[in-house]
Amino acid sequence: MVKKAVVAMSGGVDSSVTAALMVEQGYDVVGITMHLSDEVSKVEQTGTCCAPDDAHDARQVAAALGIPHYVANYKKQFKTAVIDRFVRDYANGNTPSPCVRCNDVLKFRLLLQRARALGADILATGHYARIIDDGNGPRLYRGIDHKKDQSYFLFGAQTDALRQVRFPVGELNKEQVREVARRHNLPVANKPESQDICFVPDGDYASFVEKHHTPEPGTVVDKDGNTLATHAGVHRFTIGQRRGLGLPGGGPKRFVIGISAGNGQITVGGEDDLLANGLHADRCNWIGPTPVEGQPVLARVRHRSVPVPATVVKAGGELLVQFRDPIRAVAPGQAAVLYAADEPERVLGGGWIRSAIRDDVVAGDAVCRA
Image 1 (cartoon, rainbow, N blue to C red):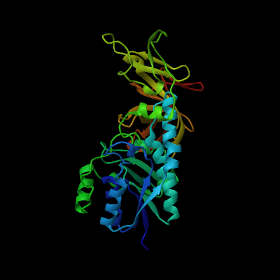
Image 2 (spheres, one colour; image 1 turned 90 degrees about the vertical axis):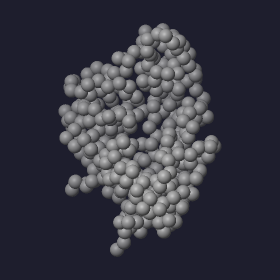
Image 3 (tube, rainbow, N blue to C red; image 1 turned 90 degrees about the horizontal axis):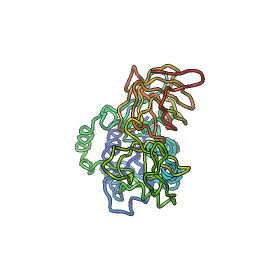
Image 4 (cartoon, helix red, strand yellow; image 1 turned 180 degrees about the vertical axis):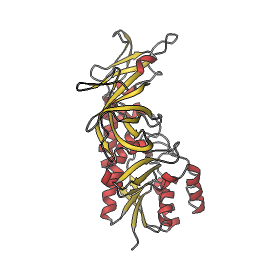
């Protein structure tokens, strides 16, 4: 019996090649483009995953492959789960990671539900990651092409969802993906990659937040609480930021080291003040066994950061980790994703960063010095 696959088709080359590979593998393929936001249509912009021509491109690819294609409206759900959360995070002084939320809620929950309702055996997406079943269930791994690896954004995927999800391009590098597209004569073979956050196509996050939230002005202070400048809202700052602080030039380098939405204070300090020995995260998800106290891991605190050696102090619904060496600019609101120390390609799971920890990480009576 031929198995059925729903493919999430954004109109880009990665999801288009995903559809082509599923056809090659003999699946009965249905392409679905998720209509998530109208924000991108308000400016002249290409190269985002929600650009006006993307649904058209996906439809052309589906026609070239001889598969049916549909557009599903998820604007309301996207606004609630992703856009509203994005605005709220910035307003609360955090640095959001909307792609994680989009994957967790829109793709691996709502779209997967629709795929199941259509009788599909699997949902395939164009993510650069891999799923390998080790005999005890599906495990999530980094994509072969580390430059394109998207496993950081996928840590929140539930194990039950991963049983029915496939990432065909995770086994390829970008040039190999384009070669597959050319082999199938797909019209998107040379299409530029998506850039920026899809619903903020011009990259002006501050202006976007201000359309949905009325910010309160505040002050920029030093570590001693001395006022150095005023600002137009905490949403304009993130931990580690150096430019746009409104401070006179010529002095020592200053960075944002603290953001307090409660009183509107942005605290600045030197580069050493950005260093953290560990972090506290919550709302955790674990793919496979939950890490245990004392377990060595590799921790990643931003999508573009290199996983660094760390030790688990506590894991479960909340996470405490101690880094082997201090790292800079751990930003609340971002995801902390753990990889196995003895199998660096495998994602253990992670959580949402609540705070950086400057000193040794303490859990109960235990103090961890990695």
